[in-house]
Image (tube, rainbow, N blue to C red):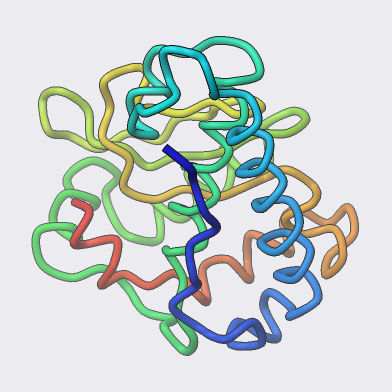
Length: 191
């Protein structure tokens, strides 16, 4: 199976001023594409040659896992945003957040703290665990909660290439901007 860069559901400049067109050109257009190209070059003549991306993530190791997970993680991340979507979750998603974290503000604080405290590169995930409750987990490098049997709901990319052009080394400022573009309608559908 040949993987391809998915077409974004918004224009490259749609997330400005929170994520710039230049950052998307590099992060989506170059980094994301590189993971896809690497994966396509790694899987021919392996048991993953015709596998679904989720299968590769759950079963592969080393470079095949790293690139497959980064393809999936980035697609999930980029498809979590929308222009002018600063809002809060509604319905069952809001109830689950309030049940687990107290309030939406408390959830945002916990997620932001997990994002700013992860050493080095990786991903912060809001996941639904096996008993149906929410948790926030940190994953280093290409880590993906699918390997742990968890259902991803929301993620934040805290690799520096996600924010360095716009925020340099100021990860907390990037996190502040992240909340302004999360599309809670998409996140609620994942829940």
